[in-house]
Image 1 (cartoon, rainbow, N blue to C red):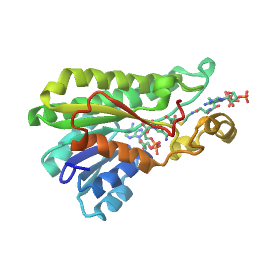
Image 2: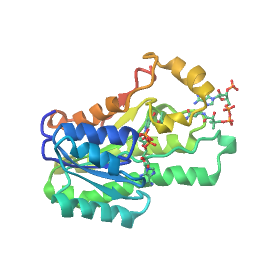
Image 3: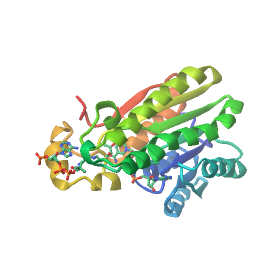
Length: 246
Ligand code: CAA
Ligand code: NAI
């Protein structure tokens, strides 16, 4: 990919799954990485630095604005700039609507929607001043098409698409780009929580690719959207889903 060498990327939720695969992919492209996660991200940092770039782990809770500001300040203190933010931290609290609690609603909205607002707000002054930057967010096919048991999650993942499109309209003139990736069902810890019968008999059966996606396949989409090869792509949603939504 063109233009990622020596860039500085903050990736939230980079301790595992899609975020970790994305950290490793950006390292292969020559970018320096801020591994930002509530969980321990030191193993990701080790693997990233083995690829010959620099990386730091910053513990962050994306729901906490002060925490998020500290994350961005730390990135700038160590690397002097931020070029790319990947809003990827996310959780599920699945339940059918008739059983969904207000707590489950609030928890998912706080992390998956407000967390994206918080991190983008904190990075914005720096990329506006720089007159360049890319903000990418992990949405989901569930945000576009809905899913049984995911009222809270679908609302948040559709919400981030609306935010992204609004930001693209507001700030394309400032040289900044905002895009979403909408993965289908990807082989990570998150999908392991789906009951086996539901996954095999209700979900995988509808995926023409007949398999779960790999985190690396999502990471490749992030690398493309952050690169100069995508420099006129703004406000877009790129599906990486094995055609499961056709
Ligand atoms: N798609 C289709 N059918 C589903 C379904 C789904 N996602 N989830 C549940 N069902 C079906 C079940 O197969 C079951 O059907 P039958 O009556 O024919 O057996 C019926 O709905 C009721 O399901 P349960 O008996 O499991 O009901 P429950 O109240 O005990 O549990 C639930 C409900 C918590 C939603 C549980 O079924 C569940 O966890 N389902 C999976 C939800 C899901 O798809 N989550 C995605 C997580 S991964 C992710 O979110 C990443 C991403 O972006 C794609
Ligand atoms: P994962 O569970 O492996 O990774 C999520 C990471 O987010 C974890 O490391 C977790 O510690 C971190 N996190 C959770 N809450 C946080 C918080 N408050 N602050 C900071 N970090 C926090 O799951 P996966 O699949 O890698 O998820 C990554 C993103 O991809 C999520 O936004 C998820 O919704 C999205 N996604 C996942 C799909 C899948 O099928 N696995 C499909 C579509 C989207």
